[in-house]
Length: 390
Image 1 (cartoon, rainbow, N blue to C red):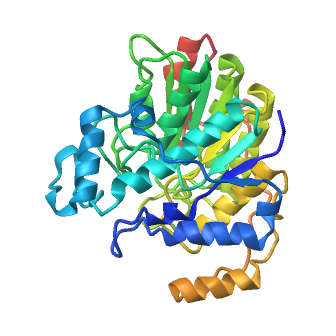
Image 2: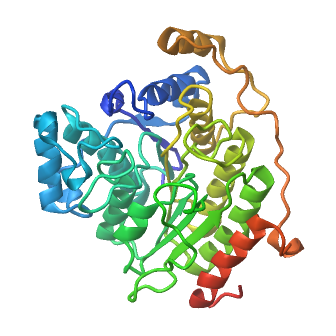
Image 3: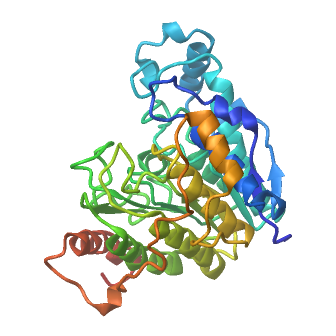
């Protein structure tokens, strides 16, 4: 295994564009890539452009009739009126939608292949993480589920155990659905409680299908959860499950929409805490998955102030050259931000809360704390199914 990381990038992924009024502005991808370059991180890893996922690859997760519908909507966007989730407010149809969605999927599949074959130890596709797409429908800004496709490709290549950890503010419902009855895949999602946020799934009682009990784990956090509770909940659930499952590959999704500035959700997490969990995922990959780590982006709708900084930290962690939390933002990137978005760039790389302090689960449980209640609900639902103490 080379040990060198890969960054999956093709500028054409910025064509994943639902229009000027849609919150998923592709400027977040372009600004992330340029911030990575401004820090010189692209010299610390191999920048690779994978080919689009073809029909046989898409078919590992998505139904043939759905792929045909995406192609039809891509060729004639005006013909999409909500069938298969296309042409909706969340997923407006646009010309070329199939090609660019398949390209993003191809980057995640390529990342998985590189890690499995030993061409890279870690691989990042921050344009990916489109975790809401279902086998037969688009959902939640997501057309093709690149995360599920990457996992399915790993299974096709011979992996027997793949762990998926999703820390997006929204439940990773599409990935959970794709592997609901597959004991080879452990899906863990930490997200805002379904009572208060789309997609209204991800209850702790969702623990996997009859053929795979205990294969789905959901930590449903109360609105307002901040750094200490968020990081505590991650460490109270994820490491023990990975130690028991012994994954051969760790796939993680790092939606930046947990941040307190995100306009579409209600958690209160800082960039510092997001960085802390990225570092933890890297460590867990080495401890439990022989270092094999595929890291994806996801949601994030503070497209200038938060997303590029968060995912630049992710790339730095994967490249083995972490960006110092006290670093200022490079001046040339600030000029690009103003040129592209006509707003001032943030001045530093985190929110000034490093290091993040949190209590370990072994330090005690507070029955009156809503975060602890969420953690305990997840542990009680799943841990006994996996032979662990709740």
